[in-house]
Image (cartoon, rainbow, N blue to C red):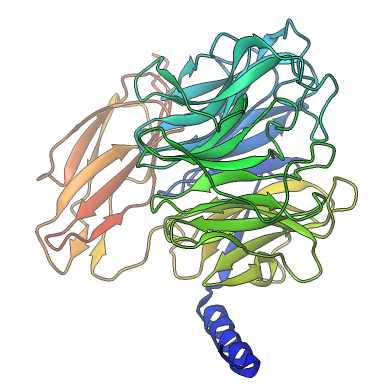
Length: 497
């Protein structure tokens, strides 16, 4: 055994090294200005952000792209409230939305308090497609992978007397029907139910990685609380072959009477690492955890002075973000957004400029470039979505490099012409032999795009009528180095004549 002094010294050195390597961040208040409430839920590798924003007293699913916010809630969704939770490279956006009809069992499945049925939807280039249930009325989701597979949970037709007849601490419920962990897709209308641990009757699939592994919760209707602030007795991992594994806990189990006290696997990255929350002994507090195949479940702790916390996001490098909170429960807790990296947990508020104008409450997601999104409080008490960008990234979200640069014209254009030619010949690379790919980004109309890999130009035809069309140029050189251009914003407004 090492002497205690050596352990302290080596731990202090590693902590100091990790802090020294932690980058500073620029902070963007995603607003919008004078809006009392918005949240960012996910950030993709290309910098596209999903979330929600209040509109006329309701919550609307939105996407932020290149500094602009796009409302996806209408048309296509019948009820007042929705939010967007994920976006992938296929241009698919995952939305939870209410219908206009009341739940026939008087359930409040999604926690909006109005008793309306809610379902998950896939939005792709303006087309909204609902995802099926297992025979019940409601369903919801938490993530989507690059293949378009969606992890979530759907009601079946089983009436369960163990379900709570009163609302849970997070505002969801009451419940009547059992809900099961499912994967939707990748084909349209496909739904696959996942296995539960022996003896359990309900579950939640809360994340799916690009390898088909899913993370979530297994339990009973009496001890498993659906999101938000979800928790249950067992944090589980489903392998791509469908087998289910109990990830263990930090000493406690589910306590539905207290907000978020229990166990839940919330994120699994492409390396098979899992983060989430786990109850401590006594079942009154919980901590964020990291689980790996090699180490099992590890307590990540909380920020100094805090009692509870959860790992809410993790990238493929194993960096975890989430919330560290001063006390459990909605009344006593003051959350702070945290970053856990190289064994050290940092308050993200200490990593952004002191005059940033937001106190960061919760970090919900981090991409492989290190961009972090979540929500914070303004000085006036409004809740706004934020984007924290590492200082080594450019304002477009791409890593700055002198070797390869993507340059395209025009970048921002309003035109009445039915087509526009994009020119990427200004792109450069020290390795030469550039290939060019012009891609369509979500949030706008879908054009006809005529291009070849060997040509630096492409023709955009505005086949879907007036409105905004979003594109981007990606160039790749002979060495495999790639770069992205600024987002190309083409506003087609045909002449009235």
